Length: 470
Image 1 (cartoon, helix red, strand yellow):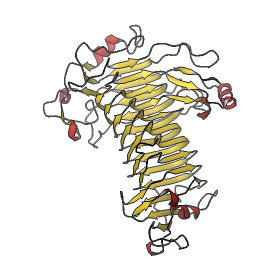
Image 2: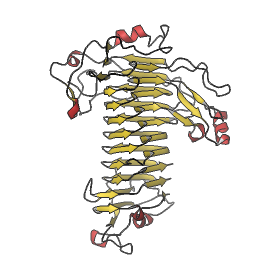
Image 3: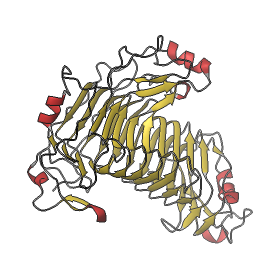
């Protein structure tokens, strides 16, 4: 974040006046709308702005109806910040942003029964040390579409009947150090061709369909070239604690070069399975002309309602801890791995479409149910699969052979307890990504690093499975 000189605009929701200068706390504006209006529109900024919100509640009437065309730079950003720190400035309306660059939201609280933050065609957006709560009325608490360089850090995001965080066609960014929770569907996913996203050191919990998924399903018209084939690529999910999910704690639905490593999953999959590797979905939501153009450009999809046929390729699930202490257990199995499927004629997708092409599952410690609990491969990871047959997975992972034992999960202490078998269980090497068979034009993404755990403790050698070192 820039340390350059910024123009300050102070706002006070009770004593401010929109006819004031806004240059100091005693000359504060009353509305965020007026402060936003004073940031030049549709021009690249040469000097940045810091909108400082004095303590108080900011109802929707004091917020911009639509925030668009503010083009900050790395040296001249637009910052909206609580002047006296987290929890002091409470917004009860949403922020709806379009075509805006270098917008940083710092220490804010957005608390309402509805969506809190939406950004489309944005670049370099930062949400840091903020609380965004959608209550019972949000569809997506945070929704980002067709954007790049999106960073969400050290924030508390929750409350949605769908997703707490929904990324569609987001390229480059991270979701790091957050609490992401209370979503009826997935707590978070990155889909629609999203790429180069790191999901690291979050606590993800109280989720319905699932915790975090790389990929899922998208209307073809919402994707962007050249990322028109897979639902997600170059996604690294590391050092997260994921707990109390009804569906899978982690999943990949139509992903290329995805790594899920050194995560701790606790009390996950109560209605089905703990982890899933299945096809992504692709349809066309009405803009048939754009869908057809994407197909001509080499994308995978059709101009109709479509189906679930986007394959996975080069997916690694390694050095994770999956711990469902009795009486908790998944309903049916450890994993869900889909078998081959035939995509629609003319979709361009590989046929057959495989969800387990170069799927690698190793170095994990899994304690879930009894020794009779099936892996759940079905038609996926068949005996002839060179990387994830049932015999390979049983040999390469500790599946119900040792109970991990953690210090105090119910109190939020996820480190291995004294005497835990995790202390004697080394992690295994995770290979770097290869992009040699990536779709044309898709840029390579730097492989993730696993050098520290969720607390920042360095891993000695390869460390141990799970988000925390013993």
